[in-house]
Length: 118
Image (cartoon, rainbow, N blue to C red; front, top):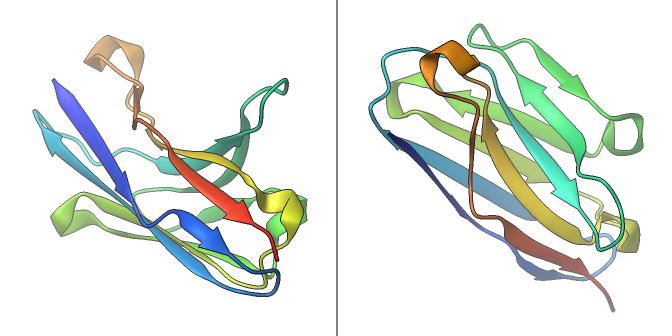
């Protein structure tokens, strides 16, 4: 089994920054794409950013130029640097390891709250 543990959420002021981290542990034998999703009450979970094993990245339009996703394959860790935060970034952020179903995935973290407010 694989476990994902997130950290780094919290409260930030508009224009501020936060850095999320997600460490994967357990039976990991592959380097699969990883990503960050977010969800607010009453809405579907949305993909914020993703990164392949080779470092190719993808972002939702609303965070382009403000968020940066990166990963350390040796440590099975993915990061999300969030700058110039806006109130609409407030959500629970979830880490995802997009392992194919035939390999037991995908896997999700427990979520970390990010609140942007003055």
